[in-house]
Length: 371
Image 1: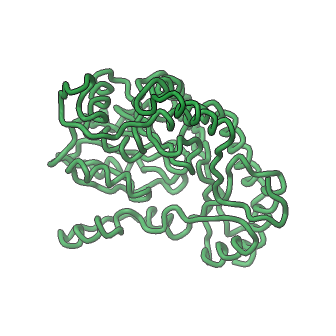
Image 2: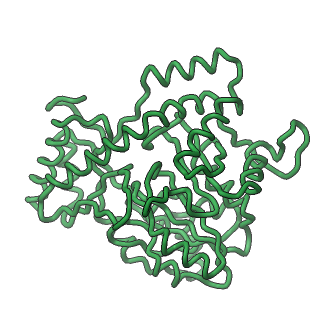
Image 3: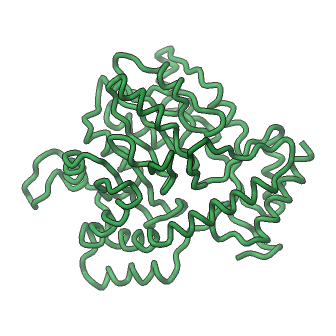
């Protein structure tokens, strides 16, 4: 916990003695890659996604990449993706040779706007990749209906949304595949790692082949695969963190509720939660309607960590912007542009004390009043 004079970090990854002991136990066992810890982690994580098959890999990006590969997406296909996300969402599409089609977001949830998705569909559209951004579930009921109507696959980017849900269904349990990240700043981590969930046993088997050089039995390669296995050390840490996730999630929700209740500055818009949604607050993201840089500088001066996720939408990043410019292609994404110009994420992690929360709310209100 921090006192009134200490810096409050925007994120605080947890590595306690439990995690250290789990890692040491595996190291002493001599079975450190793709062993019993990975299998146990997959089984335990499955409880978060309605019992779906789970396949562990070495990162959230690998989870996205392999999911698209397993579903057969590639050259000639288009995948609809939000531009307001981390670049990995679109990068995975490019890595399989498919084309990225950007669609705008909902102003309240920062997730794909179903109406924008429907408007973006062409004869080449093969899949939709909703991103459950900041821990808020996308409008999966409407997105799944659109996908069914047009015969499209859905790959959920749930890398920021462990245990989020919509109308009682957890993210990762809607689409043909769901993907999760266990990077240290996520709501739970395995130092580094990822997980894929799927309801299709054949897709799960293909994913297991893809992560391990295309083979289940040594030297009996069935397809062309990669090496994106999770280590047993990472899995053991992930299992410990999975056991703590429920409590941490409730604390994040409680911390967010406090901030929403106590942040009252007229030029600061606190997060909205859609009806039926369980927002698990990977980030507590506000909109600053005024001089955002001044507010961020003031928060930093007050000892409060803050960050912008994401200041540059993916469609404006060099690997996407330059080819689109050469092709004469433009994107009309007004809500994406507005969000990128206004958002700031505040600390919401479960290590915050009551005093930390008071300091955050008071500082935001003071700075917001000056706008």
